[in-house]
Length: 219
Image 1 (cartoon, rainbow, N blue to C red):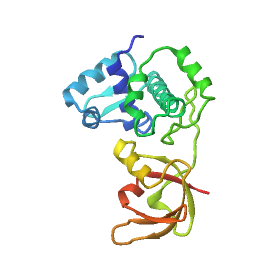
Image 2 (cartoon, one colour):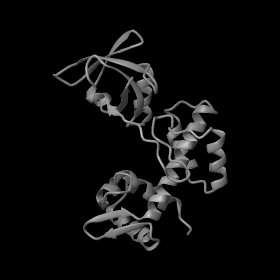
Image 3 (tube, rainbow, N blue to C red):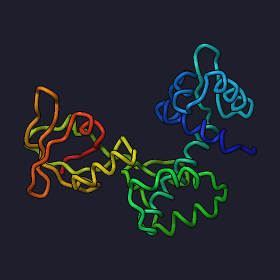
Image 4 (tube, rainbow, N blue to C red):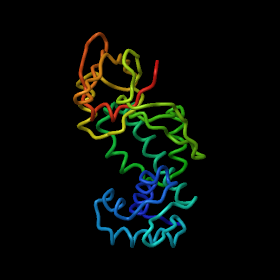
């Protein structure tokens, strides 16, 4: 069944807002995510329902059908593979790739994406640490916590970010924080929940907002 670029964007948004396409999402949340009016969202959801990509219940919200989740996961797969390609093969930095991948993710050729996956040697995570689903839609699960919940005196490895905005990623670069960076948690400030870290022998203090957007795991 033919699907438009806009419909794909809506399915991806609903997938992310609805806990990987499982939970019901209200139209106001979708409207905010898509920067549009709730009435426009309702019209689109009705179209997606007619194509059996979504299940819409008035005054309750929308959930994705199995077909809708499949489309959304496939878009996410393409997006994250293109991000890996841009960083690994074309030397883009991790703060430059999101918007480009937003365009490339709508390429329809399955053969191209399968060959891209093989060319990249089947990566399991994108440059921001997000898991890349395989062709069957399976994700590689990694145990992780946010830095805000880290224990004092423990060394952790940075394995991902929640905020993928260019400004946040540039901030991390300026503080030598990236995927794989080891950080020893030295102190948590009770007043503002900022955290003192030791990275490569140097101490830095990060805010609570930063700590809530960094994914880590124990070394």
